[in-house]
Amino acid sequence: MKKITTRFLLLLLMVSVSATSVPAASVPATEPVTTSEPVPAAAKAEPSHETVKSAVDELNNLSKAEKKSRLKEAKKAFKEYKKKKKEGMMDEDARLILLVILAILLPPLAVFLKEEELNYKTVLALLLCLLAIFSFAWWLIPVLYALLVVFDVL
Image 1 (tube, rainbow, N blue to C red):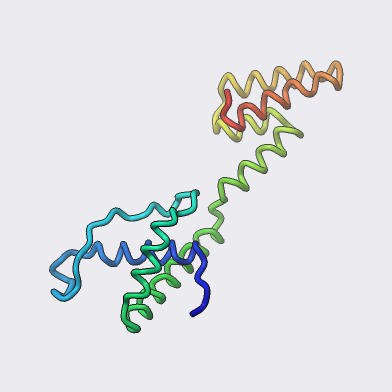
Image 2 (cartoon, rainbow, N blue to C red):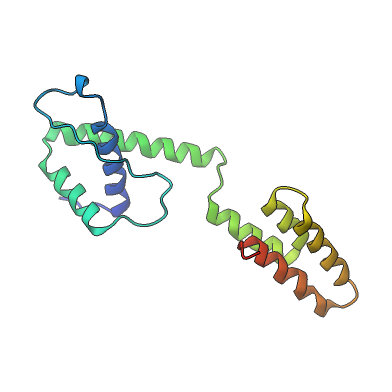
């Protein structure tokens, strides 16, 4: 049997949970209906060892036809994920990296994009940049302030 990655198992687990959360009237009487909570798709943390082990055990206990149908569902879910990602929904990590680069180059713009409105933090970053016109050494002050805002410290 091929090695199955953790992410693929998590995807299979999500599909299996969504498949088992079908109303009891549409499920044949031979299969038990489980009412486990679905795993959130946006979870950033890796699944626990017990979750992965139970997913592998569940996968090994399925019949060949059930494995094939679950694999089709997982592939479909993965294609939908790739489609959404391709449509322009930016990953949070990429957005954070771009905001950090902007915080170094143009601190007021980074603060404005982070806050998504013109508020006191944006005005303060602009004033600190105007102060930095007098000396390049003062440029660190608005850069540090913008980085603190981007990382949600302030």
